Amino acid sequence: MSLPIVLLILFAAFLHAAWNALLRAGGDRLWSMTVMCMAVALASLAAMPFLASPSPASWPYAAGSALLHVGYNLFLVRSYRAGELGQTYPIARGCSPVLVTLGAAVFAGEQMSAVVLLGIVLVSGGIVALAFRRGGLALPGLPYALATGCFIAAYSVVDGIGVRLSGAPLAYTAWMSAGWGLLMPLVYLALRRPRGPRVLFMLQPGFARAFAGGLVSLLAYGIVIYAMDLAPMGAVSALRETSVLFAALIGYLFLGESLGLARLLACAAIAAGTVLIG
Image (cartoon, rainbow, N blue to C red; front, top):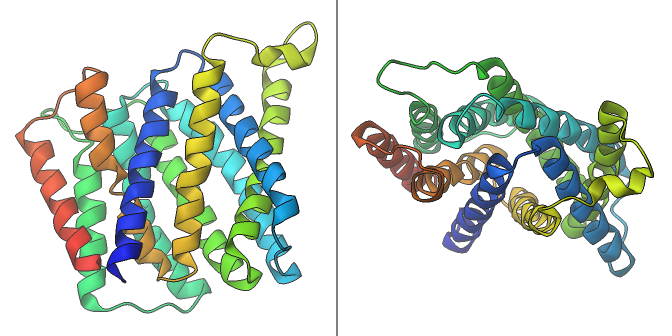
């Protein structure tokens, strides 16, 4: 993997940690996630007229990924009810690179060297280690965090295959993102059943922050999809999940979460894995 691609994915990782911190810090996280999705949908729809249509062969993958993203959004919101950003986020992100590597091998025929595989193991192991405390792993939302990781792996493999079939990475990103961006408000309305004019559900304090977070999330994942068109899915996924390093720092600096020696060692393992992958 070339250095420019590595740096681009690391930038996407930082953006991903930033919007997750915005979501974790919010009061009504389902509402925040819905507003983020609306921002994604509007930006994607605005870009579509300027992009060539992706190949029809990629359309089923875009639709499947949109549905998987809705599931991911719901489980991510649920996992943040009980866990800190520095615990829940690493578990959700840490299990996905290995699952993506297995999925890419089974469904896309990808093969990687032993060095890259070692790097993926180090990244995933270090990420999961970030979630532990002195008393072990005590997290009420653990099943939701693990399920979130499974959704991440599923949509990553689907998008990795879809973008390669599309012939147009930016257009594929726009179509797929518009799909889940439009679905999420419908899911919100079905779950919450707000009173009065339904369009007014968005008019709450923090709307601008959540909307901006959605644009950041779109940019972050757009970079990842672009990278998966050029590099192995497992390696891209592992590098993307170094976002937990940024999440640990954000949690420590802005959310009052702890960052001790054990977590710093886990960060070192992630950094070492990143070097091996890159």
